[in-house]
Length: 504
Image 1 (cartoon, rainbow, N blue to C red):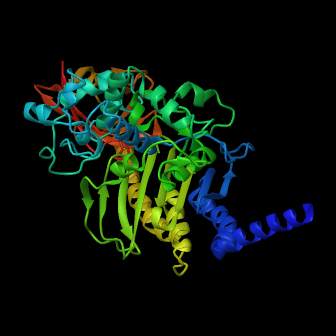
Image 2: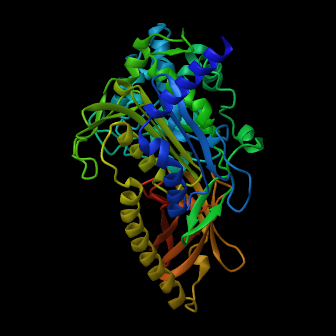
């Protein structure tokens, strides 16, 4: 009897192996290691779920560049905006339980909630928060919020100072602060924090034992990745950024093995291990298209025609299938989660460098393998334009560094620029002379500074202490011989907009 049972198990394993595409069985390991080297990705974790089973869950590379500790399936990454699907599902669940309404005004739950426009404030619903249609441009205001000393409530309160770019409900504009607001709504209606609510309703029943929403927990976990970026095309390990205040927008730290359970739950209509955790109608609510993101055909993915957003999920068509996905980016991490219900397939790729598109390309590579499409190296196709962009950026930076050298002996009266400045949205900064160099001190980011070097015409080249903020040109406007204002810019990865600070 034992022999028969062992033979049946062996037969099952062999059938499962041969059920996977040849690329997955034969080439994936080689592909990942080669492409990690191409992109200079130190560590990566991957999970594939298919037909109700985890067919692959594995780590590659190391947690920190230059060290030997290997990434495994339980290694923690900041998954950033992959957190939004949990928040959208939590709100949809509370809507199902009639503890709130998606179409109720936000002010009904948060009386202090205000947008820049008073009419938009009166009209804005919980649903509007979750589908990015409150009128702001993508990432608008994120420099203020990301890694700052602001509390979650203060992030919500600062929305009233963020001038919209679009008409209310007219355009898609990705807004992290709106999702933070949704988390505060959850806190109000449940009388518990967003962290505790998703912990009890999702992490615990899905056996996501390693997943958390705490900077300190991540920082002190020995099996957590170190964040990395590229500076002058060299890999640099960085301190972990505290984004606890981004909560329901971006604060989850998780691993491939735990998030594989999240994918199984999504693909099994709200069940896990045969037990129903939530009604499928709750998941269906999160997947309904609420806003069109793009209806432009993709040159790389020619059978992709549109992208929409639901309640915490992007959705797009590809090869006549509907795919739901979300990516996450934080300082030193980029991550992606995708699933195709029609194929009962889910894929996730998490990386501990923010300077790569391998996380995106690898997900698509695996999907194309399961859809039986002809092989093409998508990582290479992403890498070529990425390198072209890097070369162009480096050329521009080199020209700016040349300006620094040209003006290195130009007399500059620092007293003309030294002052406190204020921006209605951000608050205060100071420009100080520190050891004969001008430096920006940020009131809401005391851990970050910007060192200024003169490049002529009252402009300075700013190098931030946090390399993910980029190297930017900072112009001053002069009035009666002294600086009257300064325009601050950080990398588009953080915030596309510029901030005008007036002298106090």
